[in-house]
Image (cartoon, rainbow, N blue to C red; front, side, top):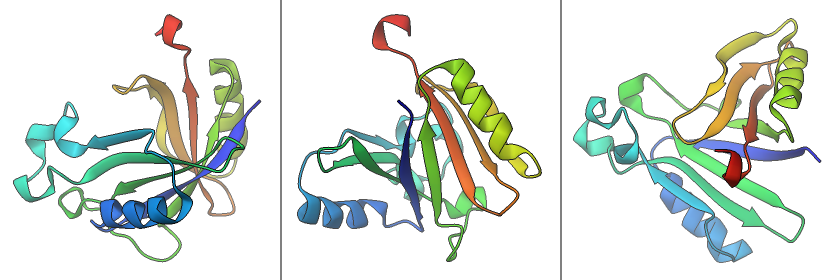
Length: 145
C-alpha cells in the first residue's frame, strides 16, 4: 500500500534538528547519508561535505517516516518558508510510481524526472499545479536490486 511521508529541508542544520526530533519521538535513524558519501562528493566544498544528504527517522508504529536533507548553498539551494518541505509518496511498483508522478505533474513542473538513482530507488521530484512539492519513490525489494 502506498505511503505518504514528510520530507523536510534545512539550511545546514538537519543533523541538529533530527537529533532533537529523535529525542522527542525516540527510535533509531533508518538511514543517514552525508554528501561526502555521494558519487558527486568531489564537487562539494569541504565545509559542506559532512552535511546530510538524507536522514530518515521512523515515527510511531504505523510506518510513518520523517525525512530530511540539508540544502547546500554551493548548489544554489536556499530554504524559505514554503519550499522547506516535500510530500514523499512511496509506491508499491515502478508502474505505480510512474502513474503517481504523471498524475501529479499534470499542469505542474518536473524538478527531477523519474529515473534510477545511485541510492537504489526509482525516484523523481515535481511541483504540482497547486505549488505543492512532491517526491515519488519506488524502492525495489532487496532481492530485485
